[in-house]
Length: 131
Image (cartoon, rainbow, N blue to C red; front, side, top):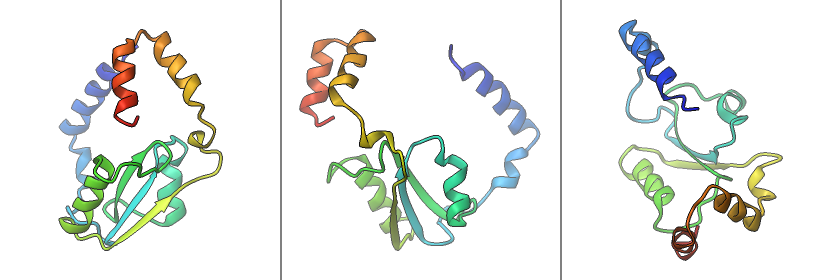
């Protein structure tokens, strides 16, 4: 079931009560740092606490496995923006123990994709684009 309705309801109250004001910060990272890390849910609160980063300190790029696989892909575009437009001058790539990407079996994942009804044509496009 979709979470969108609950999220929108919460967000409406959040904005009406001006709760966002406690999180306002500048556009540029205070510590001039870009962190590339995994999208693992265990890191959402753990990583900033473990690295002593507060809201507004760093720019963060998250993806599966903290991997930069394409020199002209969206991760590199975000790195370039952080370095050349948002004044970051240091890049830290942070991995973690028990990362699912280390043991991901592509064949198993393709099986899961097919089980959800994704066509062979789409799978072929994904494969040919390097995904």
